[in-house]
Length: 206
Image (spheres, rainbow, N blue to C red):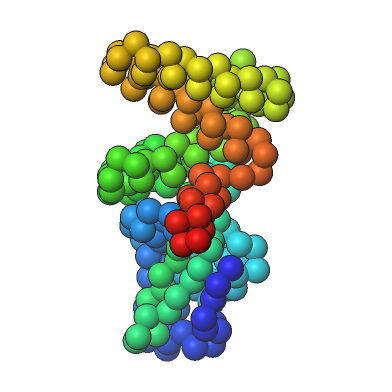
């Protein structure tokens, strides 16, 4: 986690009730996810634990986002603004951020269709923890790496056959299946699409 300041540098004396606003941003897409309020203690808990933790004004206690839903915000970076009274928290959401089930508290989707792949990863991560009886993703994970890899191979072949048949609709559908199963395979291996993008970028620079 990158933190370019210490909690003592925050202008707590200017903060209303000792709380400063914290803007939560998707570390991958740059999309604003939610606005919360942090106290000195919740900021330190965020730094120490790696999960976005706020001071809940309704509960009057520290509150870690996802403590009930498990849709945690895994913090990658925290920055302090020029006036030292507002925080920017870049995090990777482990599911929908809003309690309504929306990606953000403003009900928006990631900007750009390809950026939605980061939400797909969050959905896979969330459903992998569900009951295999209730989730195809969980049941696939339960069957192990071999079966997941087999599905990636099957969907890849089907996408290739659709392309050879000049069937654009079928190619689109099979490509969607391929991307989904590849995302599950990467998750199973402890990787993510960002690792693949980083590899492509390194190749391009090379």
